[in-house]
Image (tube, rainbow, N blue to C red; front, side, top):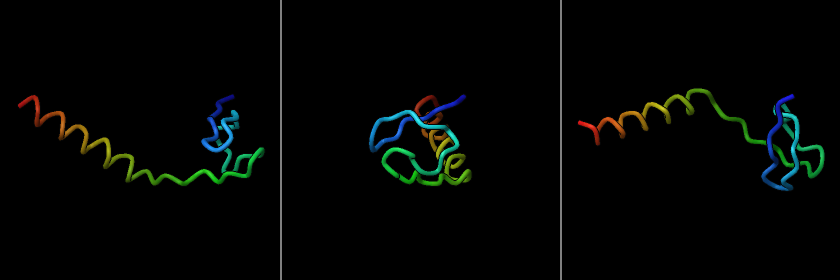
Amino acid sequence: MKTKECPSCAMEVDANAKVCPICQFEFPKRSSWITWMSIFLVIIWLLSYII
């Protein structure tokens, strides 16, 4: 079973949980396009140092 750490109470909760069952912290939704754009920008930044 995959878990993730709650940033509020530091307890391990199910990776698919949207709310921590201990402290009721709501995990933020992450859009997939933001993730891919971040990866793309990091790659461009790294290539700028190589070239």
